[in-house]
Amino acid sequence: VLAIFMLPLFFFFSDRTRSALGKRTPYILFGTLASVSLLVALGVFREISSFWGFMITLFLLLFAMAVYRTPAVAYMPDVSPKPLRSKANEIINLVGYIGGIFATVVMMFLLKSEKTATGESVYSKGQSFMPVFLIIAGFMLVSVFVLVFTVKENKLLGEIKINDETKEDTVSDGGKLPKPVFKSLILILLSVFLWFMAYNAVTTAFSRYC
Image (cartoon, rainbow, N blue to C red; front, side, top):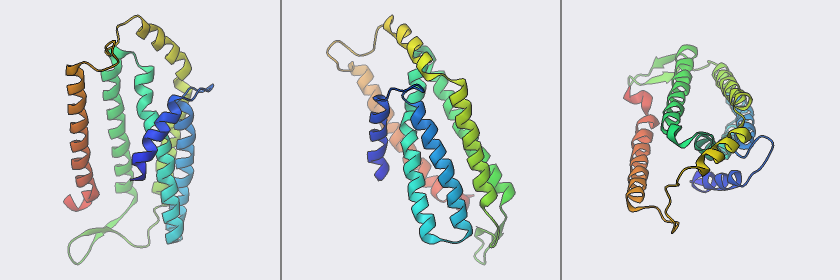
């Protein structure tokens, strides 16, 4: 519920940010660094079985991740020429799935599970989750540093601005979207809403379904 308010807020802030790193990169970089630190702290509190330490750190972790989520989503269309944005979006989705697969495989190999009396699979007691937290944190660090050191946001923004100024915008002179574009927008938003409803319904109890 908090994310409903936070995500648009940080998009608003990043949209008006100007820095040597760009307008989205600072949020992505420092938000990820904060998230990595909190993720490791989460693992520590889990190891020492500190309920309140775990819950407070989890809240801060979700807050830190909300800092960079919408700037990261806006980053691709900012630095990609219009004809290439669909392909760029496909690459982003692919990389996202790779990240999910990576986390699943890490947990599959590093964590042991056992069957309960009712036949439900649960993680074996007494094992450490810390290696999983550390590997995922390392993966996040590598990813954000690859982004920061290989993509120069300000330079690309300048190039995109020059290219876009030579092409006609999809918004009409009155500032309103044309009817076909508006209809498409509504259908896209509806499909995204239904997709997330279905996706979260499945992933909430993913292991039980398996």
